[in-house]
Amino acid sequence: MIRRLGKFGYTAYLVGGGVRDLLLDRRPKDFDVATNASPEDVRRLFNNSRIIGSRFRLVQVYFRGGRIVEVSTFRRDPDVQDMEEAEDAEGSYSLNNLYGDPYQDVMRRDFTINALFYDPKDFSIIDYVGGWEDIHRRVLRAIGDPQERFAEDPVRMTRAVEFASRLGFYLHPSVEEAIMDDGWRVTQASSERLREEILGILLSGASGRAMDLMNILGLVSHLFLKTQGLMTPHMDEVVSLLVKADGSIRRDSPWAPGQFLALLLLPWLRSLCPFTSKIILGQTLEIIDQAVLMVKSDLFLSARLSHITRELLLSLWRLARGPRVRGAGRFRENECFQAALDLFKVESLVYRRDRVLLDQWHEMEGRKRKPFYRNRPKGLMR
Ligand code: ATP
Ligand code: MG
Image (cartoon, rainbow, N blue to C red):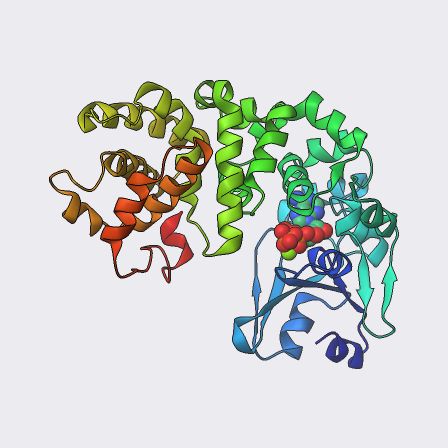
């Protein structure tokens, strides 16, 4: 498709995570293209495309097999003159769609490793910010002054944590310092973006490392205003649980966001309601409800997602009672059963509990059923 843009006289490069991941020998999640063609021009060149976004307009081009490539026009950040002009023109709309040249497009991006262009015409990498070297040194460095860039958009701080954890990079000292000093700014970001960001981190396959890093950098206290009190005293356990969960995602199936949310609360809940033979579900549920309400308010969770988290946690105590109690057969039909069993397995490993109960449940499980969350539209689990 870059060739097609080229054929019509436009400049077009592969950019962002796609280039970074190719250089790191990782499978890219998606591909982004940057071009000097306007969204309308791109739309005209590709039948199977549509323009999306109002803040930043870009074109999604659809390919066979469900692949989507996002094409955006080179943009630049507004300067003082732009600000003045915008005041008496269309206002923020025109400010958000300022077109620029490739250099300006690079300078508005977040980290050097995300700012490489790849030109498939001659297989060259265009690097204005030293991103190539940073990839090889495995360091995450901001473009420009990190303090300023994080003030512009505080979500870049959680993005820094996610990239460092997922790619196994270390944060450049200036990035680390800026987050330590100005971490409170994350609360200025919109609640939807923050929620998506945190859920993205939990599902990234490196949630344990990310949580550990967010804790060290002081971000946990800003992101989890209410739940931090439950999590920080047990942070080592939380991290161990997440690390085990990350491992099991990589081995078999994806997990649902509610499963990770449940793990965040589990150590605290376990300290209050131990897995003993005398579990009283009613009491446990009261405490679970408290904790789930807190995380719901911290992360602006949907009613559905907080409900799933609650059900999963309650299911863990049901599992802990073993399959020989009344109602166990019916519970096995519960839509949360499989997902809760995943959690139970991770819990047994981390706390080194003996596997007797787990084996009993597995025996009872018999024919393997699909976890309830597979094949469901993503939106339902959020
Ligand atoms: P992933 O593998 O998670 O998709 P990515 O680097 O492709 O990583 P995207 O969120 O898909 O991340 O964004 C694509 C590119 O857009 C980034 O590589 C970066 O250059 C730029 N970008 C995204 N979000 C921001 C931001 N908040 N500030 C500045 N640049 C950003
Ligand atoms: Mg991407």
